[in-house]
Length: 203
Image 1 (spheres, rainbow, N blue to C red):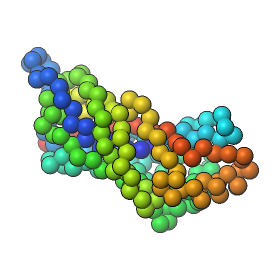
Image 2 (cartoon, rainbow, N blue to C red; image 1 turned 180 degrees about the horizontal axis):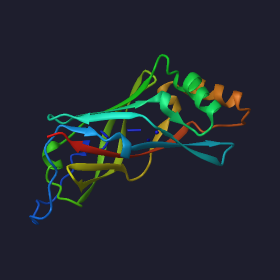
Image 3 (spheres, rainbow, N blue to C red; image 1 turned 90 degrees about the vertical axis):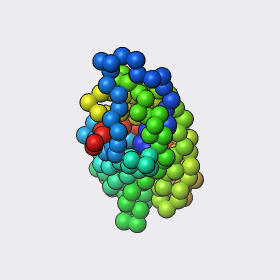
Image 4 (cartoon, one colour; image 1 turned 180 degrees about the vertical axis):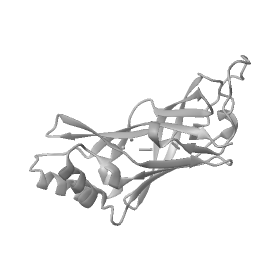
């Protein structure tokens, strides 16, 4: 999912060693805003047991405020599967975007530890995400890398995909409808989601 989830990561409250090289710039204080044009959320669907296809969401927004509250919104109408009719079916039958236009991810960020990252430094973290999708909120754990990439920007990316299970979000009926329309014997209800999110300080 320009692909699920920052929160996800800045949220991680990464702990790192103090900056010792004065030529390395540290992360600027927040608030931070998601840089959409260089951020992605993607997911992989699996049909007929072993046929996998990559998809993405092309519109997302997000921010982390000075108190460390992080939010990422994914516009579900922006789903891009590279087949127009499949895009339309996902919007109408799976996500039901007329009623549920967004997927929203929230997390708490340890701003103090984030500010300790020097330029080029990367930290692994496990982050708890509250994922609001299709009217249901589920807490999931994400294994992420957080990197200070300079220019007042932080990159948060999945180290391994986050598994989203259709049954957790009342998506099974929609999945069955997609399977029926596409005349498929099976579509996996477990979907791996990956993300690469860039946040920029507004200060």
